[in-house]
Every structure is written in C-alpha cells, then in structure tokens.
Length: 290
Image (cartoon, rainbow, N blue to C red; front, side):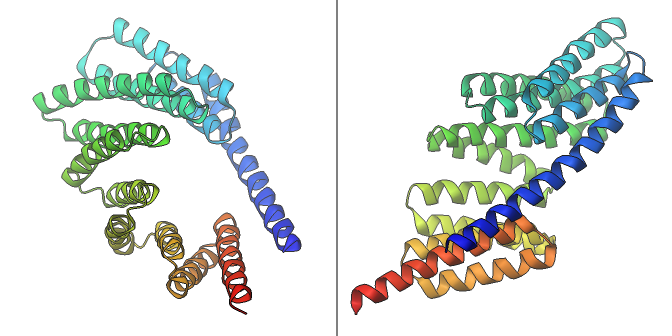
C-alpha cells in the first residue's frame, strides 16, 4: 500500500512540474507582448491574462499585481476614451480581472474579499450587458452573460466552501439560468456537478445522484471525457458511502478507463486511490465477518 502511495505521489509531482513549465512558457510569451504594447485595451487584455496564468500556478502575489494593474489601466483608458466600443471591451476585461482576483482570495481563504471582487465583476458585467442590449451588440451580450454565469458560479463556490449551502445553491441556480439562455452545455454540466457535491456534503445522496445524472447527460452530449470521468468518480463515492460497493467499483473503473484514454495522469492517480481505498474497506469487512 505504501509503495502504491509513493508511485501516485511521484505521478502527481511529475504532472505538476510539467504543467508549471507549460504555464511558465505561456507567461513568458505574454510578458514579451506587453513590452511592445502601448496603454490600450490590448494591454489590459494581456495584463488580465497574466493575472489568470499566474493564478493557475499559485503565483498569487504576481497575479494580484497583474490583476490590479489591468483594473487600474482599464479605468484610465475608459476615462481617456469613453467611446462605446472602447468602454464595452475594456469593461469586460476589468470584470474578468475582478473575477480572477476574487478566485485568488478564495484560494487564500479570504472569503469576504473574494465575494467583494466577484460582486464588483457582476456589477460591471451587468452594465456592459445593459448597454450591449441597447445597441444590439450580440457579441458583448453573450460575453457578458457567460461572464455573469461564471461569477455566480464562483460566488456559489465561496459559499459552498463556507458551508453556506443554501446561498451556494441560490447562486448556482442563477448561473444555471444564464447558462441555459446561452446554451452553454459545458457550463450547465459543471454547475449541476457543483450542486450535486453540495447535496453529497449534506448526505442527501439521492439528490446528489440526481444532479450528477443531469451533469453526466450534458458531458456525454459534448463528449467531455474529463468531465464525464469526474462525474463517474463522484457517483462512485456516493455508492461507496451507501455501502453499494459493486456499483462504486464499476463507476471507479469506468472513470479510470476514460482518464487513461485522455492521458489524465492526475485523474488516473485519483482513480487508483479511490479503488485502493474501496478495496481496503471491502477486505476489512471480510476480515470482520471471518
């Protein structure tokens, strides 16, 4: 068992290092572009992307710097050039930056600041959406709606982390409504998965499975094997807790197969961990019977 854990740990470290190098290459490329850009909307776009990429690898201080710079520069550009096109594009980038900063605060456990930034993002997205509807700019309408859905989803995650499940579901539902309007099947699947996790945490296994089933339907329709493997794993955890070990194993092995096909080393490691823990539980019960 110890040997298996060591192997899984080595796989995780290998994947983490590979991802870090890939992210660092992208960050270096973005930095080179910034050096040749002036203070315009494209600069704001680059800064908010640098915020997001540094956030993804845990470089939170750098991410904060880029995110706040994107927000400050964006506001400056709007003041200097308040034409409709410039304002709409720039406000979208500012909203994205607030969203990124909110996620960083969530990762750091500063939930009040996380919510503050997500609500700031929502306020700006609603302003853009209203104006975009007035001038009938569908591109900005769809971008704003997708951003709003993401922000409500992120707020739901904050409340879920705080075990404020009612507020979490309320925000997930707001996200779902928008995702349904814009037919964002990927987003719909992810949100139903999140709702399923809440019901699982509340030990409401029937409702958890009900939401997982809906998410699974959408993941299957869009052929998202990574999302599908995650849902199957979640279903397996529910069945394990219900004592339905045969069903749990079936879900774990199906999830494992999809992750192997996808080359998802972290997912494969998690699947083997789930299978190993379940087999350990089954063997322990058999010993007790004997």
